[in-house]
Amino acid sequence: MDEPLETVIHRIRVDVETSYLDEQSEPRESRYVFSYTITIQNEGHVPARLLTRHWLITDANGKVQEVRGDGVVGEQPYLKPGQGFRYSSGAVIETPVGAMQGSYQMLSDDGQRFDASIPPFRLAMPGVLQ
Image (cartoon, rainbow, N blue to C red):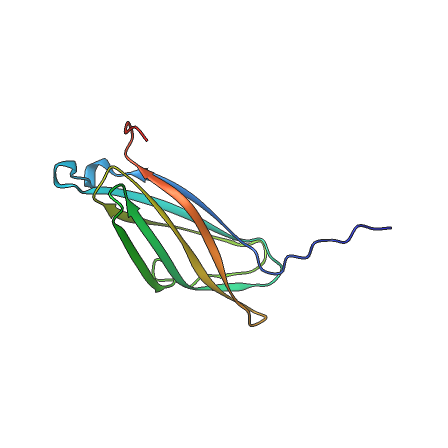
């Protein structure tokens, strides 16, 4: 007897790379600048468009910045199964260490709205004990 195949209709994978921007940061003024590069991959079976983004950016003092907006970097990428989209953006926090997490609201071709979650990731100035 064949094993049933798991059918994943909507699956968006999000990978993140971060870096500290020393030349734009001013530690004496509590300004720490980070860039992040996001790769969004449609691992599901239905094309989907990224409609909006929602971020929570938290510094080491517990200060939270909430960011909502349409699309990413001025675009609302449309991803067919197997396709990806990569972009870079940045965040400014008041401490040398912080974290980001959030979600993208997606709309698939079958009319379903769903959230692609972005698991927490760390923003950290190199050499800082964490």
